[in-house]
Amino acid sequence: MSLSFSSELKAAIPEFVFGINRVKYINKAISENPKWRNESFELLKKLLTIMISKDASDLDFGGPRSKGKIWYRIYGNKTPNPQVEDIFEDEATAIALSILSSDQKKLLITNKNLDFALSVKLDGTNSKYRFRGNIFFERNFLAINLRVIKQKLFTMDELGIPELIVKRLDLQHEKSGLFLVTGITGSGKSSSLDAIIDMNNRNNNSHIIIIGNPIEFIHASDKSIVTHREVGSDVFDFQSGAIEALRQDPDIIVVGEMRDSKTISTVLEVTDSGHKVFSTLHTSSTIDSIHRIIAEFPPDEQERIRYRLADVLKVVISQKLVPNKQNNLTLAKEILSVDYSVQAAIRNGNITELYQMLTEGKISGMFTMQQDLYRLFKAGVITMATAMNYCNNKKVMSNLLKYST
Image 1: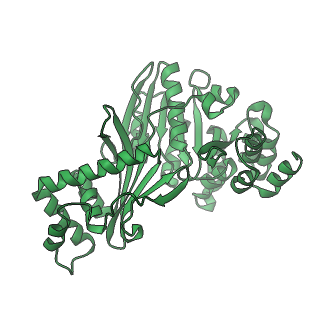
Image 2: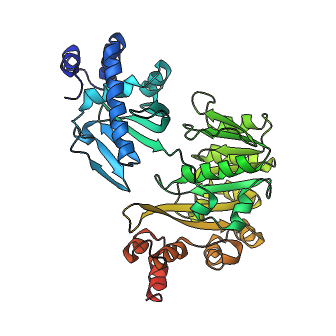
């Protein structure tokens, strides 16, 4: 066992107590024993130090799912670390509770899930590392995921964003509209969005309001004043934060995620007011993003949403992190830049026409995921198999690769 007090903790909990009541017993025990809480926190710091040393993106433990093991995701692959001592269910619960405030514990008990940010100094370092955390119930036990928030911000060049698109993202060139960064979980959306915020922060005299759940990277005000509002502690939810932002004299509003129809509707309303709005969606392509937004609404509202979306949408960047030949990850992306033709296609419900516009839109900074994967393959960055595995259209990808050999 990893914690010196594990046996005492187990003895203090009746055998028949499980679920929330067991969590409450463990919370009471570590609250009454500060040394137990400190030891739990110190053990977590050791796990996070290993995480940083291995350049892992995620740490998972706790719950029956982990079988007592500590799991790290390293360059896309999640595996247990056999060199770390096992941490079983009650120990994981003690560790989870050691980093939470009383209010956070109440939210966890009520919602059976908690998103939070953790800022902590690790052994041998003077600077703090930030992590995005999620604690949830799994088969009546607490399970934990922690993701490192990279402190190095990328430049637009490093992200491979074409100059024409960079100008559209920059407040000094385009003052209003909706700009989306999309991709599945773990595709680097937050890193790309933070890079865009940083560019605007350094280039423009403005007010940037970021609404996050949780707030990940903290942007120090530069040319812009940057306001950070975390859902749960500073603001009730994304919807409330976006509406309240209108009364806070913003130039740019960042809504961390458009999760539902209410948030999407609010984002469209805020953008209609003439502000520049950035947000994210969990979708795998630019066209899927448009479908997803429209599909969130009942059929009798979809035509109205299509018209509103056509009016405000400016740029969609859809991205994936794909394994490269150096055994780490490379960014592949698809970019849609909205012009009059794209607006007309969205307004008229001819979404299928957009793919042809993407394919032929290089002069406007547009390209498909297949075209970008092909570029990476031709540059020797990724293999042919990777290009096929991560494309959105295997037939198109196959044809591109066929003509390259």
